[in-house]
Length: 250
Image (tube, rainbow, N blue to C red; front, side, top):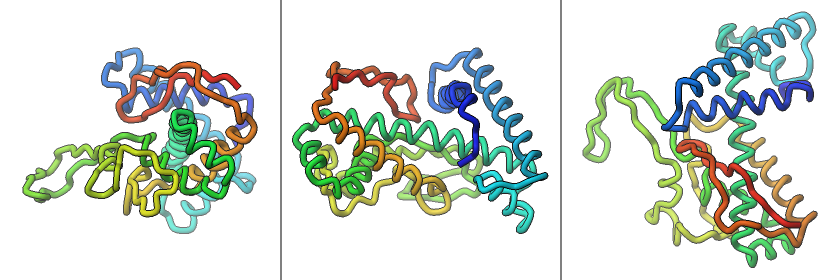
């Protein structure tokens, strides 16, 4: 959608990983910070060039669409345009990859429900919603308080940072029946994997579609697939929950 050439895919994956480490690894080092800065500069330089090319001749990609929004409504400044492209690429890659990996790992741990999904592929939409709730790719997010307020007896002061624990909210027994049970047929599933209201993920529909297509296709193509390790290794990241590797036999 951003028309990134295939020759740059591996480099962009490395840059995406560096940014994810900056956001969610509490044990990050100076080297991690430098790598994230290099990644953001690299992505920004790429999109600066890409925008310049499209100013001469627009295409049918997302960058061209963002430029039209910028020009018609004066919504995005030049720097905001670059920043939006960087965040769309990062968010669209990192979290969706974890949705697919976490989802497959979860399904392989529940073979009976996975077999039911193979027999009834129409369940895939509800399945992805349940996987988003059960094993949220984004575990928390933060906001700055602009004006002081009180919520449930707690005072929030201006300039404080508030952390929203999305993963915990998605296992809230007051909202979900049997929250620690995977239920691919769960009816009412108002999870917060994509946030809410003004901060609802702009790429939610694309992420859902990618998850539905990838997970169902893999399960159908490899019906005998099973995990090699019962205890896979997770990435050392508190914000973005994802597997370092998922070893399987097919």
